[in-house]
Each structure stands twice: as C-alpha cells, then as structure tokens.
Amino acid sequence: MFTNTQEALSFVRSVLKEAEIYGHASHVLNYDLETICPPKAMEEQGEVIAFLDNQAFKLTKQDRYIEACEYLYAHKDELDEFDQVLASALHRQYLKTKNITPEMSHRHGRILQKAYVDWVDARQKSDFSLFAPSLAAVRDVQVEQVSLSEEALPNVYDNLLANYERGVTRADLDKWFDACKKRLLPLLKEIQGSSKKIRTDFLSRPVTDDAQRKMSRWLLETIGFDFERGAFTTTEHPFTDGLGRNDIRVTTHYYPTMFYASMYSIIHEGGHALFDQLQPQENYDHFIDSEKTMAMHESVSRLYENRFGRSAAFVHLIYPKVKEIFPEVMADVSERELYEALNLVEPTLIRTEADEFTYTIHIIIRYEIEKMILDGTISIEELPAIWNQKYQEYLGITPDCDRNGILQDVHWSFGFGYFPTYALGNMFNAMYMNRLTKEIDLDAALASGDFATINGWMKDHVFKRADRLSSKEWIREITGRDFTPDDYLDYLEKKYRELYEL
Image (tube, rainbow, N blue to C red):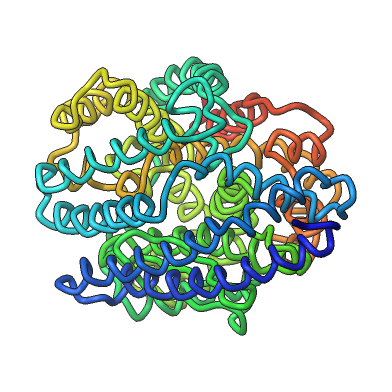
C-alpha cells in the first residue's frame, strides 16, 4: 500500500522506464520492418515486435503498478503539472485495458503485424482479396477492445478516434466535414472550369534517386531538422518514428518521374520530426512525450508541407536549389511556373500526392468508409467498389486498380480512426497561422530560410504545452478561440480563387 505520492510516483517511473526499453527495441525493429527488412522475413519480424510490445504490456498489468497508478490519480492534486498529466493518462489507459489480458494483447499485436505484412503483399500485387481477411481481423480486434473498455464512449468510432484525438467525436467530425463538402466541392467545379492554365509538363521529367536524396537532405537541413538527433531513409509509405528523445527518424519515397513528391513528403515528415525534436525535455522526463494528439502532429507536418512549403516565399527560397539539383527538369522553368505547378488543383487517385485543395476530400472519403465498416453497413469484400464509387462521386475519377485505390494507404493495417486527424490538422494550423503571421514577418523568414525564427515561435506557442492539453484546449490556448473549420476554408477559397483567377 502506498502512503504518499512520491513513493507511488517513483515506482511508476521505474516500471515505465523498463517498459520504455521494450518499446524502444520494438520501434527499432518496426523501423527496420518498414524500410529494409527482406519480404520473407517480415512476418517473423512482426512476431518479434508483437512479443516485445507484449512484454511492455505485461509490466503494466502488475497489481502493484496498477495500485500505484490509481493512487496517483486519486491524489493528482498533490502532483506538479507534468505528473498530473501522467496520472490522468495512466488512469485512462488502465480503464481502456483493464479487461485485456497479456495473452489477448499478444494475440491482438500479432494480428496487426500480420495485417501489415499482408497489406504490403496485396499492394505489390494490387489484389485487395489478399488483404481482406486481415482487415476483417483488425476490425474485429478493435471492436473487441472497445467492448472490453471500462470507459467506453457511445459508439465504436468515438472510442477508436479517442486513441488519436482525445475529446473529438464522430458528431464533431460529421459537422465539420459537412461544412467542408458544402464549400469545397462547388469551388472544385469552379476551378475545373477556369480558363487559367497551369504548366505541368516538367513535373513528370525523369530524375535519379541520388538527386532526390540530395534534395531531401537539403530540405531537412533548411527547415531545421537536427541530424545529430535524427536520420532519414526511404520506405514504401513515408512515416516518422520517434524512437527516443535523441532519435527521431523520417522516411520518404522516390518516384523516377515525380521529383516534387519526395520533396513534399520529406517536408511533411520533417514537420513531424521538429515537433518531437523541439518539445520540452520535461515531457520525456515525466513520460508524457506521446500525449499530444495526432491532429496536433498533423497540423504541424501539413503546416510545413503546405502553408510554408507551397508558399510563394518558400518557392522563392528553394527555386535556385531545385534548378541546381534537377537541371534537366528545371532548364526552362521559371520561378512562377514552379510555384503554380506546386499548387495545381487536379483530382488524383493517390492521397499522399494530392494537391492542397483536394486533400481533405480524400480524408472525408476514408472517414465515411470507416464509419460504414464499423457500423457493419458494408462488408469488407464490398470495400473496393465503395471506394471507387466515392472517388467518382466526389472527385470525378475512378481508380484503375486496387493499388491506386483501396490499397494505397497502410493505416487500416493497424486500425481505424487516424485519417480524420490529417484534415483536422489542416484546420488547426489555419487557426494558429493567423496569429503567427501577426507576430513574425513570415514571408521574409521563409524567403530567407530563417527557420530559426519560425521554429522558435512554434516551439513557444505550438509545441510547448501540446502534451499537457486536449486538442480543443490547446487550440483555444494558442488562438483564444474555439475550434472552427472556417479559417481553413476561408484560406483555401482566397488562395485558389486568386490562383485560378475566379
């Protein structure tokens, strides 16, 4: 029996430190799995990862650890701000996993690891039927986990969304995404009917992997990525992984006839990395470094990718370097032509290559399908047809194969509820961009490559307290206003009406 908070806190920290070691090893292996692991070794490696994750989970099922966590939660008013956040997080996790045994957790982990391997195989062969059984198993695992939670929310989707975006509900998303559809879909038709023609012929000129690698490194250096505490490589589906305080790894993918794709995926992932590299040391010391929500994270990655990366000021900064590294591509291309091409609005099949304007529509499609899957209104086997139907309805295009359609994203191999955070991230950064541009000369900083000033502002106002607040509280603290999608929609309308001379 614990008699004071410091005794309980000391014990909890010792267990979390041990669990962190298993977690670190698991992340290293997962990074290897998604980058250089041989295809035939993937399933075996996935089993090792599931074993390590389960060892960490077992530590949290000890009676004395649970007793210590609950003692801290009951006495959290005696703790400092950081440890209050930890106590609340541990309590939520306890309620969520109280009825899940280590054996069940290990089984769940193996199902998710196999789902990733099956997704890779199915995507390479462009055959959804190879992934469908694993996807059904992932759905069943998640429904089972929700049914076992001691603090279940009204519907399955709200519970899964809470894994990524605490405090946001399906009802919120329905309202916000309906607002997007009402304003974006009609404007898309106007843009498509514009007489403004944007030059794009140079976008598909061939480039080498080596040139793209040089460009990627230069872009990471430019935005302030710390190579003493991070690294980058390639993968099938780009991601960022925070292995530890001083080990943040990012990935990209090189396409031989899409030089800009790797540029903007590395800026996107670099934004994620900066969030982790520039967060307070106290977050790591108090084991709350992963308490930020995914929409917070995506707000930053998509801020760097789009609001910064596709701005006229940033294109001015990178134009000479793009010409230097891709001379065959850029020999006859002006700075204005590059800017316009990087901001082209054209419905495409692949979300990660989508333009800034249509991107949120890709997310809405996935959100609406996820609800159907979890409500049981469609079968797993129907998914490719439903996917294709929605792409035709919203974007006027139909996937030519599963690889370019239902199999393009890795996310469903590890569950549901993540996709909406990308769109919410766009909306969050539109809100705090309004404050950022009032407090620093953003265009001047971007044009000169002064990311020290930009990152300093982000560190003080966006990164600093993210792990201590829900996303709704966080955006209200930064902007002084409640969340709204209107800033984002206003921004898109203004920018693209001007670009397309509407």
